[in-house]
Structures are given as C-alpha cells and as structure tokens.
Image (cartoon, rainbow over the protein chains, first blue to last red):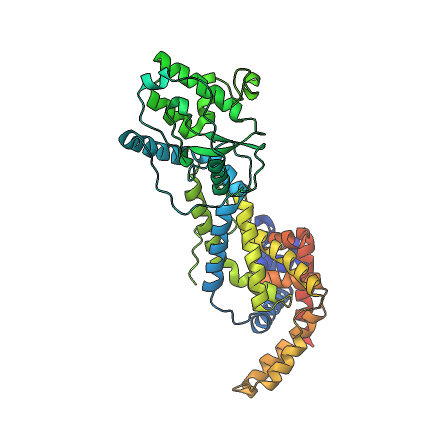
Length: 274
Length: 192
C-alpha cells in the first residue's frame, strides 16, 4: 500500500472516515489526503452520503417511541418470575447457599433451645418444580430441633428415623411443588435427624431424591457418624445439629474426609430399613 | 434518557458468580439487564422497525431478546459484546417473526410517501430540497439488496463493523465492502 503514489480506494476512504483503519494505515491515508485534493473531495462525498442516509433514517426509520417505563417494568417482573422459578437458578442456589442456610439454622437452633419447639415463621411458600433434591430448600426446610441434652440423645435408641406420617409427607410434597410425586422417587427425610434431637415438624422435613448420588442412605451414614461422635464426647450436640442443618454434604465430606460418598454408604444398610 | 450502564457496552457482561449469594446475584443481574435495556431499547426498537415490525410487536420481541440475555447470563455464560449479542438475537427473532406473519413487511417507503403527501407540511417551500434529497436516497436504499440495507441500518444505530459482521454473519471485509458499495451509490445519486 503506497498511498502517496496512488489514489485511495473507495473502501480505504470509507474506512478512514469510519476510523476503522489501523493506526499505520490511518497515518498513511492522512498523508495521502493532505496531498491529494481528488481523494479529499471523494472523502467528502462519503461524508455527504452518510449525512444523507442518516437524515433519511431519522425521518423514516425513527418512529416516535413510547416511554420505556412500561416495558421496563414488564421486563423486571418477568426476570423476577424467572429467578424464582428457574431450576438452574435453584441449582446454583445450592452451590452458594451455605451462608443463608447457616443463618437460618442458627436462628432455628437458638429458638429451639428456648422453646423446645419450633421455630420459623411460615410465610408465602414459593412453588418449586419437581427436581432432584439432594439438599433441602432452606426457605421451606430450615431445620428444627427439640431441647434435648446429650445424655438424652445418647440414651435413646440409635435405630433409624421414625417414619413420617403419610399426611405430613403429602404436605411436604405439596410445599415443594411436587404434589403428585412418586413416593419411590423420594424419601421424606429429616434434615436434623431425631437421633440428633431433630423435631417432628414440617420445617425439618424435605423430599430427598433417591436417585441422586447424595441420597438418603449417605445422609444416614453421616447421621450415625455424628451421633457416635456426640455420644463419645468428641463433638458438641449443638455443633452437630448446626453442621447437618447448614450443609449436610459438606459435613459428610468433612467427617469422612472424602469428596464423594463412599460406595457402602450409597446402599441401604443391612440392619435398617429407613 | 440518562444511560445507567456503568461500563462500555463492548465490555463483557459477566454471569452470576457462583460465590455470590443467590438473592444478591439475581438482584445485581436484574439491575445490569435493566441498565442495558435502558440504553439499547430505542436503537433495537428502531432496528426492528426496519423489518416492518410495529412498535407494539417490536416491544414484544424486545422482551424476548432481553429475557434471552437474562437466561444466558443466569446460566453462567458470559457475553463478550452486549450490543452485538442483543442485535444478533433481535435480528434473528425479527426474521422469525417476519416468516411467521408471512408478509413481506419491510417498511414500504411508498406508503410513507402517500402519508407525507396527505400530511400538510408547515413550510412546503423550505422542505422541498430536503424532501427531494430524501426521495433520492430512499430510491437508492430501496434498490439495495437486503444484506446491504441491514449493514446501513445497523451502522446507523452505532454498531461498529465487527459488530455488524457478528449480527449478520459476515466477515469484516464483507461489511466494509457492503457499506462502501451502498454509500458510493448514495453519493453518486447526488451527482446526477
């Protein structure tokens, strides 16, 4: 490209007008334009053509647009709807919810001690779509405990969780937006197991998917481990309750020192049919 | 309208960070998408208008466009060039809308002519020169292939050549040649 010795092409002129030439090319073009009246006139013609088109565009293709406030409000409402309902949003929520759950669990456990009952005010229930639940929704299942001393926990039978009445199971499915759930696909599970002082309350129950890797049998293994530690005195009961309510999967990884459930924990235990 | 988007539209818009609390992250995402909406709603609506979409239809399409942006970011995917991305989605949805309605709804400039003829101008003498110039340019633009017209419309909405290429699936060189060809025709029409 030797601009001083030859005229600029139409494309080069337009690219120069548009600021789309590289720094070097732009410098060369300007050097040529400063010496060439013909190219400067042609460049001016391109500027004029742009002006002509912009005038046409503004008069023909720029309708008087209504205020954006209505469409903006509609967009925001639709986004809010999506963020409530989208399964992905929910899935990501599981990844980042530990703080919220921890706060909820702390509130639950503190009040549980004071009232030996429960706990969280129930507000409008979000309706969730059927999904694979390996963690409860903290808005629905923050966890609930009864006031029990360690000795009371450890003196009671270590057998599996009490079975949840069918009517209560139905309520749990209803709350989670899966009223016609296949009972075989879920186990209505205690978040804080009664074997660790968990309450028989809907705030402490959730539909645990059977088909996930982190299924109810894995959680049973964690509960057994925590109870063992509480009863041998190496773990505080309140701490055990809080860890399981906050994020039972993290607790499992912590106490078994693994990243994935151990194969023997994924299957039902031989001595129990929970 | 005061632009609320805090950064250049060419700046990547990032998805929700996994480490952010859900409520905060969604609130931030709502704000980001709303800010982009405030800044680009008018240019996008005008671009949809060039497909023959009435404003009300255009508003509907735009809702789809911005919800697509929201879903995209919510799914954890980044957007490298927000403006280019939105115009591309709007372009594709407008094409689909036009196919669906089965009508060639490019804005008919002749219809505008008729409307203008029926509309008494306040100062017809003063407007005559401009009117003639616009008729001349309209005739040139009308005769252009659709791809060339699209390049002009997108450039008029402020898109750079690279963004136009992304929207229309053209190379940078092809965009440059298209605009050069079209504007050269407009320029030549003024010489006659």
